[in-house]
Image (tube, helix red, strand yellow):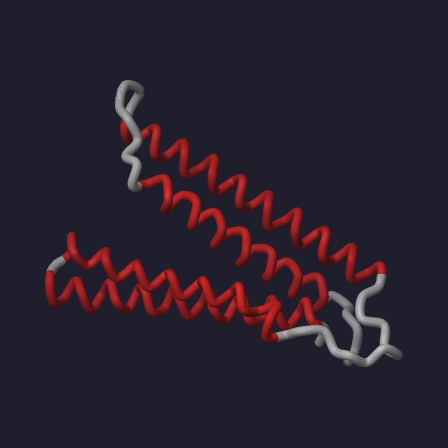
Length: 144
């Protein structure tokens, strides 16, 4: 498993952890304080900030004799990035259209939705890019 695969696995683990903890917190808070205040449990999505540690944890090996990154790896990385950014753009468009249709033609979109849109787009980007990278490597990757 190369460095990019390790980072992708780490990102998927962190994403699953943050979704699980956030949903669990919302359910527990809904039982204790009721539903409107239970949405505060979504603040556990901040666990996703741990994704920034992936490249630091999985630093490149110091072995100079091994090839670490070849043309196939570069192509897989480009395709995964394209998939992630395309899904992120689709999320932004869908979120914007849903917000506009809920508010109506003359209404204003609440400013509280904008950070949710940005964080949601980043989440979609990272998860889709990681899944795409793992799928492409599983289709005939290097045996290491």
